[in-house]
Length: 373
Image 1: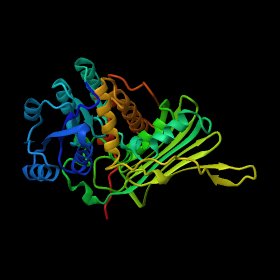
Image 2 (image 1 turned 120 degrees about the horizontal axis):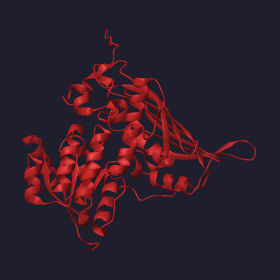
Image 3 (image 1 turned 90 degrees about the horizontal axis):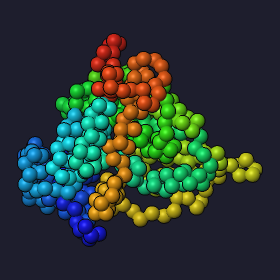
Image 4 (image 1 turned 120 degrees about the vertical axis):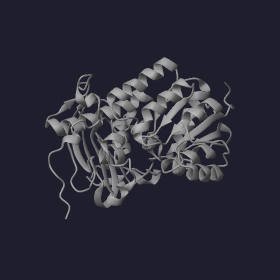
């Protein structure tokens, strides 16, 4: 393979995030990617996407598309309950999968995807758009290189609002099809970003998740404390009930505090680093982050570009199923901690544990009824 070869890319799911992020990302990559197919069950949505993105090869089913087009990379922008089967089918057809979050609904399912990676020699990459948004890679590099010392305290607070009408789409809000609520669906990217910035070596989780107000099965709020192998600690708060919408992320190190205040996608100018000077005055560091070229579309584009580079070079991409499993295990531990009212250690959820087979195994059995005036 040469660095000039364009990957044949297909997108499965032409509504929602597929039309808003994945299809524009493929289209924007020019000579690096060729959009060869769009798959969607809805004929009108399929036709609209084909017209908008200049694709004439439209399919209602993924199997037919894989056989006809033999793509190199397939972006899966489908509801979560479809991810596992589609990702494995894609890899067995000889392509790499680029799969929306959550990767899947259980550690057992994630392990089946990892097994399929080994079986096929192909990769399933989880969407981690916050890692590829403005400033995030610079933040990771600075923390990895200990520019301001060791990370000590982390914060990832996702305060969003979703009214009851948001769950009118049939697959949303249900354990069978969405697996989890505010923690997994809305706060996933902030949690994933924080744990990555902190070094990824999380050790225990203590938390609570509950459905406080919305007419849904899954949780609409959660809070947790995470302890890392390094000794660092972190606070997680995830909700869809907040009228003050914001995503706040913070890493306090030995010599500085790095902060991000955003909503749905970090931008470079939303990051800051503050330090105390010799007089005890808090000052913003002016030489960080360094200027970055603006993304042409969004962070999906940046991650996809990295995937295509790895594909051309024949090397392992970032954020494969093993990496996505780590975040999924942390979320599962939070749900199990809520159900058992104790701290959950990394690695303790194994085959035979109900939480190995379901992200929030105890959620469907919550006793407290939700009262609506």
